[in-house]
Length: 318
Length: 259
Image (cartoon, rainbow over all chains, first blue to last red; front, side, top):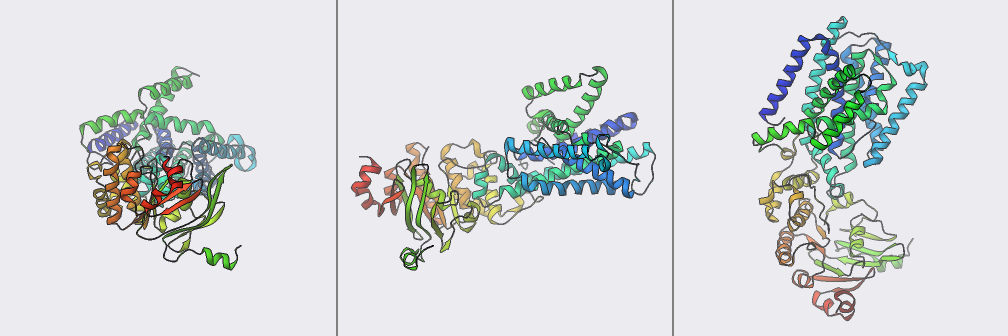
């Protein structure tokens, strides 16, 4: 995962998050939400590698969330199993929908994802008998690794799991970016024609990236559902998908760390803006986005990364 | 579809590397390929000349699977490849470079070649880093062969045009093709650089024993490097043979060289 400085930075950030959670218990919920959002952002960053932006990826978080809710209501599975189930379900949905999506690029790709997500949103809203309609589905707190925990303890355990998954997913995505398929994915952005003339199927490479991105959104959606104990169609609404893209730009799409930096800044700006400027937090976010686009097009992490690079010569980093 | 006699008369010679029979394609009213019968033997270095719009690039695009002909067939190494995708034809052993070099501008020169090596070495994967997944000897050898070793760490997008052209060919050459088709390898390069560029390309192709076709406008280059010359006029091969003979052909002088 790059330079020693970067590793140090990530370790410091993790320590800061843990320290804050211990010192201020109320902060656990926003941190959990930021982490689950960050995982979905990580998924979108994978697609941005290929030069593609999806405006419907919240559908995979939403699918995973409903998977968790249905399974949690029906069978009282353990929280760990529910996360696994939600993520695998989202990946499977991504594999299926991806077969169709990888044929499209640019605005068509973005809008088709949005269209799929809106179909899901409507279905969840209309079939109230099964899905709970717009009120969504509530489910009981499951056991965590076999332990029946109170709300407080469950949240702490979930936080630990979310941090672990975030670190593992970040490492895995960075590893993927440097791999054969990850490098070919980046080549889709610059020259698909040459990829085909090397005998490499751009669609197959892109499909792999699409499934990975759906799986990451699924992990995020599963954690989100467990944090809330409730899922609603809102989870898959297009505004949520837009938010995820917004956070990717805010945090910086060049590195996995950017996804989480962005997600934390977003969550806490939203939290404080909502408290201080009631009803105007979208205004604050809008202004932040405008400033970012002009002042830091590589995102918040892009600003930091420049310094990491300048001070540490990196022979090995691609 | 065809009578036996017709098929026999038009059969591709079994020794030909690339053959086409009755290749036709029009764009709107413009005939870009008009029943082209063509055979290329292993070891030949064919130059293709012709004015803009004569159908040179269309011919290449059909042979490499980028365009589907309205009628006719393409054979490579004795097998029909008509209608196959660029990916399939590439895998059979046809390399291609482009008039506008098609390189991965955000990758380094070395990474471009490593991606090519990953394709031919059948290395895929989500985990192993690219530089550890492929046999880098092949990459380094090709870099040196095309004199790109000093630019290995530079972004492909930052290369000057001449080196970008070399990289375009290098990526195809890593695939160990039997045939290399180059569309205007010296276009966009200053006239001083053309001969050194061709010298490097031709030496590389000779060393790897690759048969080649190249589209070229510079008659000097054609004279010097081609063993055979085909002149394209309005979707047809108007003259085909030894370069000196073709360049003396009055039709070629009038319509292609333009004197």
